[in-house]
Image (cartoon, rainbow, N blue to C red):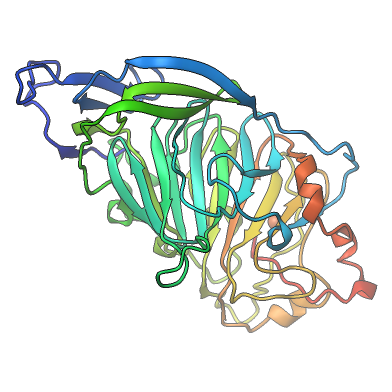
Length: 403
Ligand SMILES: [Fe+2]
């Protein structure tokens, strides 16, 4: 995140003497992207972050691809996916390549374990649910509609508020997870040469939330941390609580941005999908389709024109329980429109959209620039007939977001 932030206590000069009340030195740690040249932060621990008592590989996390690779549009219904488990350990892979993976999980409770992903930046879109992301950098509250971005190597723990009042039956949380080999960032064209967001960008610095409360834990004992690295879960047991940071500053920390803080850009005639771009990765983009007025020329056709998005696989997640359900597509649906096939409005929808004043759609789009594999696990909740839904005989009264 290209904004400087600081929390807690830090010495006036970096790499200088900074002592605990008992006279010992705090342990300074630099954490950041690309060694010493990317965005980074300096953290001050009560105990050295290096005191590992044991290390072991727990299990592999390889994703198996669907063997049916015939070219067609695909549709997955997450409402029918398996529920429960951990927000970090029980994610169901849906689509993946070497740059980006999309996974889905409806966790049954808070994580008790500490976790870090050391091979990917994670962007977790909170479809529903509420809680606090705890990390070495402090507490970051989250709620529905938040994109929670956790850069690689940040030790954290997902804590959810129980669903309902006083209940413990579940979290009610639904999480759409992006795991990215490259760094997740705001698009460069939204920023000036100094990193400040431009007036024309669809959001401003005020829309990005950072950890707000830092309460360092000075506790000794066995503290297992589960670390994703080399496509496997590893367990490292630390001899102290990992959230022992008394202060930090820099540009590297977890942050959150709510989809409803995205300011839609509209035009007299149809605006192309890049106006909805929210984040940039290596080999993919993430876009937000938000409620907005439609195109205002009287002759405008607000429905998207048919398009062949060459060099791009296009994935849409339907994020609104209110923007319901045209035939076949429902809240929680994921559609994959792969490179090599045109897609567009369903029969009758272009005509029906003329004169429409607004849309209340809410969708998250991910375009990858290299082909995606469908995960075998996603077959369990796939709609196998989706690729035929443009036929007049299918009577599919569906208008996709203007992607
Ligand atoms: Fe599209």
